[in-house]
Amino acid sequence: MTISIFVTPFSVMAAGDDDYLSALKQEAKKVDSKGGSSTASAATGDAGNAVSREVFEAELKDKYAGSAVFYGKLPASSQEEIFLEYQGGATISELRKKIMDRFLHR
Image (cartoon, rainbow, N blue to C red):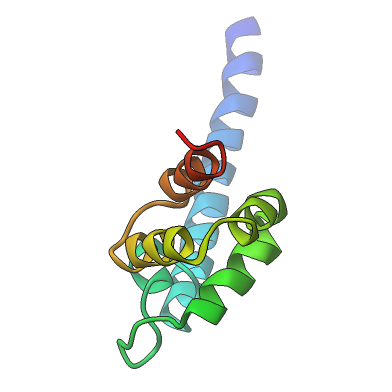
């Protein structure tokens, strides 16, 4: 009797989690198909054109304000290098590390 009391709530929660996770996955697919950001779509626009540098810098400022400040203090050649790596598909963590390395002259 005691075992069934513990098993039943956990099995019901697991079923609820599955429905919840399924709903989340469906919503994520909707957002991604409508032009939401993903690794592949972050570096390209709707028509497959490269994102402009202004869009990259605005996104950096909106999502990573500290990194944007350091990026803005870099010489134009370093900014261009980082932007080109972004277009090439570098992850944001790689770019943020590179920004700090360039800022600290490493």
